[in-house]
Image 1 (cartoon, helix red, strand yellow):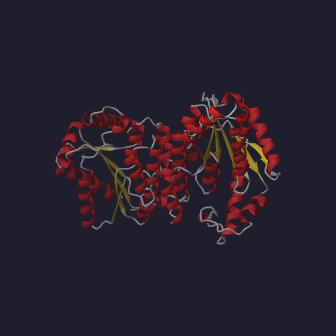
Image 2 (image 1 turned 90 degrees about the vertical axis):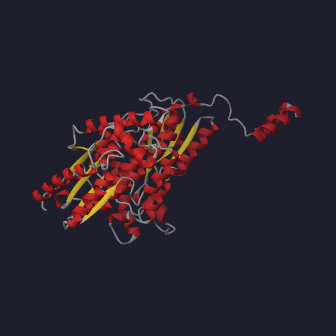
Image 3 (image 1 turned 180 degrees about the vertical axis):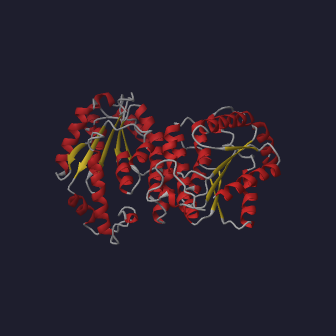
Length: 255
Length: 231
């Protein structure tokens, strides 16, 4: 599988994968904050978030209409929409794109649901591989506790209830997540996941993640040429200030 | 009717194609080829003869048909997304209508099937191998009748019916021509080419549908009659 770098895209794509409750969303959010502060062109994209496909997906989930096949296809449609309309143009324009979950989420979930691995992989074969995939590996109990602590109401598909693993949603969720974890671990080598120990404290994981990103990607190539343009209202205010205030005071304010 | 079916590829998880009975009969062809008319005739004839029938077609699923319709109105979907959205629509009908009907021994009449979807995607540059994998979920029909009509004749029939040429059936999204008339002819020629390409892998019974409705009906009845006798 070719990465975006292999395919001569000027941009780079970083994906995080892991179970619900592995803390990957926190980590990628912190990566985004860091890269933005560094003046890097960065875009964040979340799994299952295409506006166009959303109403069909939520209808399918609410009415429990989805089978393993349609579950897989509707998520592939959602991904394709984001891929073709957002990710590809941004990567062509030299952005660093951060993805909270990428095609490996589909590989793990759909195969756990019984879809043939080759079929699922074939359907997603239009997409390039990430330039860096971090897999946040927490002990199953740790992830489960993070999610189940408050006894939240688990949704039907989220708990894997369609697999008829157990009549108890909590029990079903545990078995389902365990199987997904097995799928992820089996893919680690094939897709070059970098494993991050998600049992560690947030700060320590973030230090590791940032180092990994700086080592793998020449970040200065992705800086914005000029600072982000200010919205018109602020631009006007600053312009007026600059005319009246002395420059040193101005520097104080922005520091 | 105890002949066995098979899937083109991986099929559907937990479904054994050999356990499917019934008959799956597909009618393919462009808008104006007489598909709907012929299917209505066939349903009438089959039901009168004591066969239970079910009909499916494109963009008729509970799951995504409305969303697909809305997305097409804005013409904002790119080709991979559109291909997968249509595949979702097909899979939903396959699992909720086609497979249960076949299990119950019904005759399923499909007003177009995966071939039109594949041909449309191929004309838009999608990879044939990718499409074959995607539609490996489909069971192989017992018969596929392709109603072949010359593009010029299609124009006449569409115009006499609605006095307009449909945006998508003219392939206007492809930018073949700004002029809908020219675009329609070019698009239909390209679709014909894609069907000829698909014919190398899938078996179509090509029916000359430039003829009268009655002549086509007669031929279809004869062929389906033979099929039902064999079964």
